[in-house]
Image 1 (cartoon, rainbow, N blue to C red):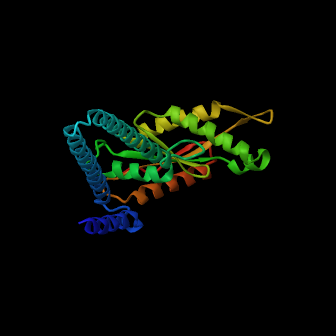
Image 2 (image 1 turned 180 degrees about the vertical axis):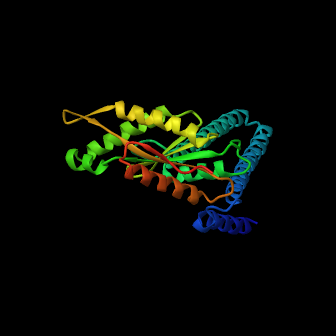
Image 3 (image 1 turned 60 degrees about the vertical axis):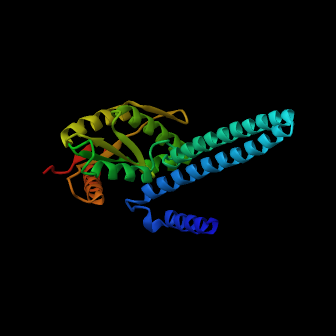
Length: 264
């Protein structure tokens, strides 16, 4: 029985670790079921352990070893408390690890992987946002000049400041992520392009008004933005490509502005 369980455990671990199944709709359910099974086995093992220990101590009581029984019972209770505390600690650590794995280490915004998961959720026909969503792709204007003139550390500080402005300029239901380098992505659920544009315009205005101290110089950042609205049933990469094309138009038009795709 133990060997069969070990074989099954090895097969499931191989399946969960295989990147080919990362996007499979049943992968998460399998992981949850396997975790639930292990939790139940842990509980059964603890119950069995306590049961065996209790029977042993009961026999000792029958032999008149009352003091030893009490000491063992207290020891077992302590072991259980330690075990429960350890499991709670492990759950907290796993939750923290999951949170950190979804965040960009520099800006603490969602990272690319986490945002792709959010995009899939929003594109799901059963999503609560049946009004669709808008994708805004942002790029810091002339960011290379900042790095070249003030250094990469100053460039990092500029990105951190920008991330904070973006985070405080959107609604609670919106998502902001670092897409890569000086590019960012904002998801605006339940809005049309014109409504999303108003939100992003406020963000751009907040960016322009922020003065960054760079070696005693006041630096003003600007960003270019391309926006596209998700069309039900289309591939996620398609809406991202349309937002990217709109971003190109914003740069071609002089930067520091928003460009919209043509809404159907």
